[in-house]
Length: 357
Image (cartoon, rainbow, N blue to C red; front, top):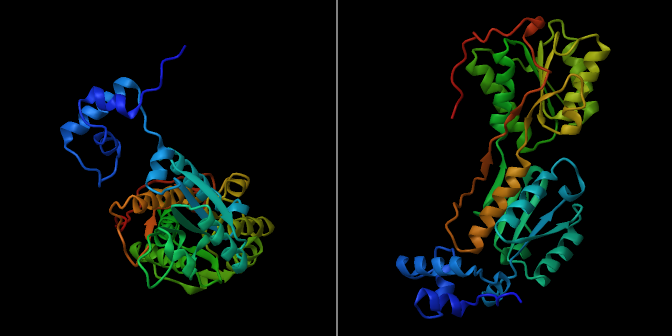
């Protein structure tokens, strides 16, 4: 017959104190009270007995469900930003929370119904996430929840938000091409007025400026941020009298269009043309031949940051509040689409200034 499961009274007896000291000592939040010596005795007694607190009962006493809601427009139904969900789920589980998913399909009426469902399920806080980085107008009904924004931001309220660092994505993509010796670098970009369009263009321009290269607007072509848009813009750039030796593509889908245009024009990648994208959509970046060097959007990290910040809000722990979103780095994933101009080997001797902070 197995031994009885230790209780809170057993822990108090071994620790040599009243029962009321145990929950305070075992509550790992900054508001927990009690002397350090008492907390140490209680933790030692709990470890000796193999006692662990009942989180569900504890949550009920604090009127918590230990549940978070993730309300999204389309990320639950798209491969592009699904890593946000994975990052949020794994981080929530590691912290002892459950994550509930709600996808609105960008339908305002459905969004209202799902906010009601969040209330009915008594979630303790909400992640409001979008498929791509843009400004949002928040439903007023969300004001009653602890709230964190993921891959989006709002104005007029200091709601914690996390987004990709679009400027440095554009800067480092362009710098990768500069590091390989390219001086005539084209940029195929998006026609939509969203933060990524502006941020990546500004990063591209700043990298050229730091390398002492004048910006040439003839080397920038905009179209829909899809494969056909990349194809059309690449055809324009690659048929110039003095064509670029490298192209930075707004995203991996546009980069795929660049590959098609280069193939039709008899331009070999990377021997005659180097290409860098943004997204690291692995089904595209790995599937293209040669494999596409690209800047990875930090979807997983944004989901994880969102949950960590939301749990801190719920636990009344300090959270940095700003009207500006927190920006996460986009790391480069190198494959085989970048080489020195004309297929020469990279010397690594080209002098470039240090990266900006």
